[in-house]
Length: 113
Image (cartoon, rainbow, N blue to C red; front, side, top):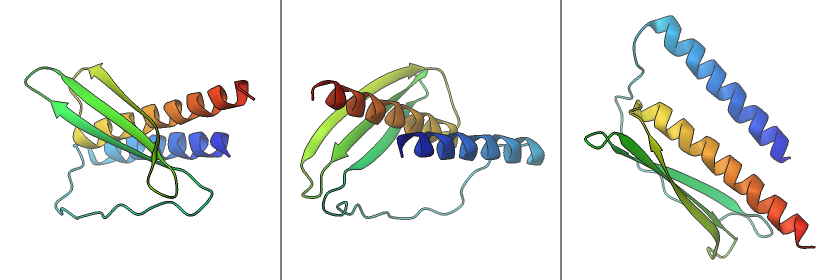
């Protein structure tokens, strides 16, 4: 299953890059929507990622958090990435780092058994 998630994320990123180059300019969203976080189903975990862009300082900050079905934090991480990125690209980088993080957590848990 983790490999399917990675494959799907990579496929999405490739499709996005192809679409971006076809239109010849950055893709910007004209709508803002409020997304309400929901607990994962019992027996499952949920990974949430977010990014903060510090354009004046030339970097982005990425955060990822894994919660269980009761909302308890199982693991969390943050990372700084130097560079300036469009918002969607920064969000995709956050997703990539979140996936890498959850794989690391899974591998760590497997090693401890």
